[in-house]
Length: 86
Image 1 (cartoon, rainbow, N blue to C red):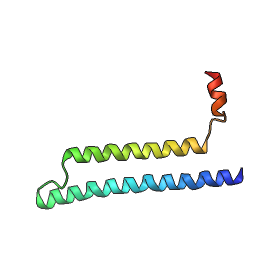
Image 2 (image 1 turned 60 degrees about the horizontal axis):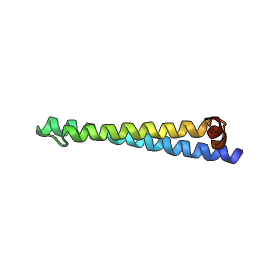
Image 3 (image 1 turned 60 degrees about the vertical axis):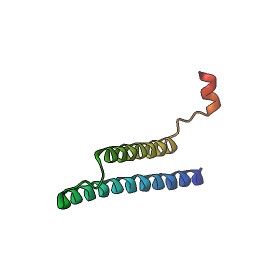
């Protein structure tokens, strides 16, 4: 039980670190786009690329936190008992 909780905490920390890295990378990308657009007057990346990256970061962050929440707070039922209940 103790090692299981320790393993959950380890993976939760890794998922949190990954989500933070994605958000920092996204913020850095937006910052670089703004600086280049302001200084040189031309786009570093198009709007379509920024929308795609924003969507990808949002999905990855939500998936990471969903995985952490499901791992840290399981529903207590086994898969076979869930199938029998349907």
